[in-house]
View 1 (tube, helix red, strand yellow):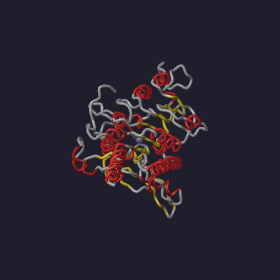
View 2: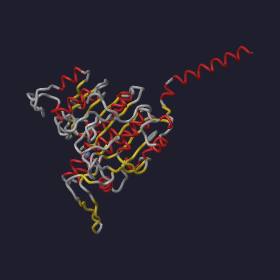
View 3: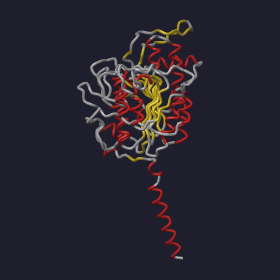
View 4: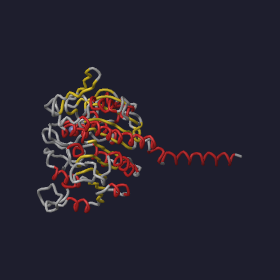
Length: 394
Ligand SMILES: [Zn+2]
């Protein structure tokens, strides 16, 4: 009898040990607030005990509250998927030394947690290179992916990869981006990756970045069908010469989001995925309200797919933000007829929306500055390193 009892105790101990060593426990990464460096005390206290394994950060470029409202009105006042998420809040967006930010400074704040000057990507106003969330996630063993509807070298995705003070130099950004060894880069901008002598080129030199990418192990995808069948990382998907424009061989943002998340999440160590709806801003710059509504609806569909993916897994956080508001849009009700009143062709200093879903999302609720996103995401991926540091190379 005593022998049986001993055997039972030994077997029980083995089961407990197995559970602690296995995947079940690594799903939940405990963080003790007292051990955290680089965060303000009140922020450290707000960190959840358990962090998500994967983070999908979705950025609506130029998406303000009124743009969302206009889209909702176009859907007979049905709430958008992002508006249905359990966590909501807003972000201030001003850049270093200015009330109104550009996409580069705003994306740098979101990616690094530090304010910088307009035009700067991953670099402080004094030229100090700022470590971004992709680098921290990568350094701590996670898979990293960037997905956009515009060129992959555009300001928003670029801020999650490179360190330059000239956001318009997309050719140089293409080269630098490939050397960052990200696991997945999908969007438009093939022209910035091929040498000048190729007819589709948007470069002014003979650098063959496609060749460089292949030498670094990347598999190149050019079509939606190739993307659907892809099953390996690292992956470079360039589905258009410039920004995506709805061509029949192009994937849409929702398709790219789900497939990218699926590929990245295969690695049990976790992942960080940034997804940009890049053309909301472009439509707002030219006061094209139907275009804004179309782009937000497409972005919202991608959010819906991301949340479905997160729901099915239970260990993924989806965070939706904007980098700034574009156009100064106001919706006016004139005798029951809604009309759009745009106040600028540029960006404004208005606060932008924030929505969240999944483990850890609660701490983003409420009003914050845009740097809070970068600081907290970096904190998600590391508990010991400071959230900014001078890198040895760009
Ligand atoms: Zn922008």
